[in-house]
Image (tube, rainbow, N blue to C red; front, top):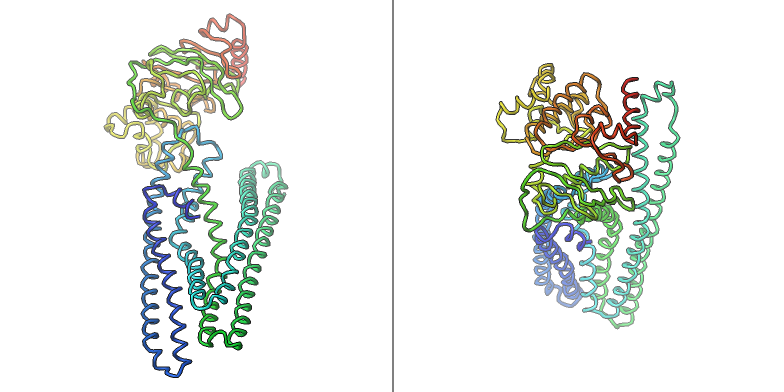
Length: 571
């Protein structure tokens, strides 16, 4: 557990944890050793001169006081280390996430990272502040007491020591059974959460169909499975708790019987036996607390394992000697890209001269958006190369590459801030006149004028307070402000109404002017403005040429063109 914690924290933050663990261990050892003084105290009290117990009582009091001071210092150290490492872990996790390739962030990753960044980090770092001290105390103090018992009477000490492997075996077995139960419960919890979200999102459909009172079968099934899994998880704890309690009580009973036998037989003094029984009784509390601490540790360990999995995800490699591109042309050289076992791009070779426009067309799943992502290095190719200005993108520094590229996606994400703050993400140091000019070119100024608050109007989380067309205009304004020489457009008008489509079209035309452009489009009328068109299907180029050439050829592109005109005309 501690090894996993240190690995998650990394070398930079592992030092404070080691010091805290060492301090807590010393505290637990002092606590155990302090009880050794009970033997001479009781021996003096049961002897002919009880007054001889006074120095030992003073020594015992001093040992208890030292333990209290060490306990206070170790607890404070644990809380301070937990708070400092919580701050450091957020920075480490945030820095690592910023270095991971954008392609790593799939649909399921967002929720996973959100939970980890909030509840997960708090639970994991809570180990240091709240769980390390009772864990160390429950482990080290009983072992120290057993050593003391061995020193005073090897027979009673050996009987107590025999319980150690039994307790360890119970804890290991309980941990393994609970690990499987906890994993199943986490899976059921995730499934039930997804079904709840599905049920909430389905409310408009259910209400339109007049089925507002109807229960959702999949949700009921998921909740029932969660209930069963929770019951199994609870029941799986009982054998370990009962087994530990029975073992501890059985060992104490054995010590009591053995001590009485030795005392009555004259093989051990009454004071020594009584003191050892007191020591044995003192062992029971920390040992029994292992069940509660172990349950909390298992929860924290699962969060640590998830954090460890994220932190061990490999960022895209950075070149030690970045090369400066000599231009803004693009070239795909026999590019192959795989996602899992599926080949998404298969041997694509094409070029886009500087200042020219390439349109990529094809059915859904053909790999069109993936081509754009490879240019921006959201992923690395499996074979071949993607070049910008004659230089492989893997040999260009990340900062240099991102400064050369502006991307406008179909789904625009905005931060929960003002309109101006979101536009300035394109170039934070831009002057006010430049921001206003970019907004005018994207026709965002029309949106600003009708919103209460104008430029200071908040957009909501993800841009929820704006319509899709308004978010798209803001995204184009941001790209215009960035003024990058390469522009990547991913179906930016496919889901817009005619008014917003016209406004976005004007902004896109201004954005593309004089730049190297690769655009993915479903609306075929946007393709006619491209200098060259490639038709992609199954990750391969099926046709390429100008729009007029491909229409005259009467192939797949011409078929798409005809269907597109019919669809847009009927719409």
